[in-house]
Length: 317
Image (tube, rainbow, N blue to C red):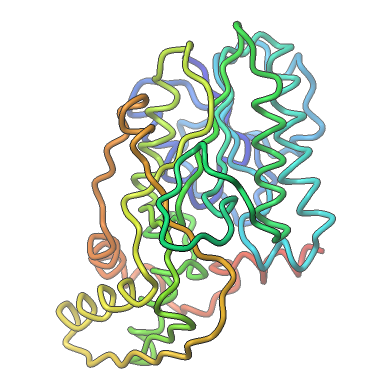
């Protein structure tokens, strides 16, 4: 099977590409390489703007995976217009030309942030999507655009991922668990804006596994699927990171709670993905911290620009 991964040189793609190669797939990645190239040599790489692709470019591919676009709220809020183009229009366009090229399935990397603010409810894929923030709106637009072109010959799966954290060859320290790990190691403290806010969390290795399960699913399956390991309050996440860092490093870590308002609060059910895709996540928050700590010597200066998407994006703007 030949798979094209749009935006596949990023945080998730740098973990996913080796997994796909290990399972015997032919992998081609199309990416602008904003964050460098950390892919295995066996993956074919096109340094390209995905908007420049035509149906003929995707001829011969069995599936397309979309990991491109702007990846978090700070990038979306810095450039809302670019956010809506890259997260809404681009996946819709790529799905449209993929179907025209005879591709059988399109897997879109969506986000649980589409649910916005919920109170004491576990949201499934039939629950309302209410977020009013640019990033979440654009992810929902992309999701709907991709699913709109789905038909009997073209399957479309949108994976609504929890906050993806953990270690990747293309490393980031602007993700909740990774940021807490960084400040715990650097400063001996973890800052929590609001300990009561809920977030679904997903290790990047489990994210790659979710995309693999979507690729391998029967072509009769389409639709949106929540994927996360579990739901945690931000306070819980801080406690897990603190405990694991103290155990591994011997450092004392202080937690500072600010109790600031946050209008992003959601927890999700992943039963549909477990039942229909066979998605079975393996790594909890403590597993993430252990892996981050085991790669500590690789990171060097935590302040390196390439570890923070918004800093690279501002320089490119």
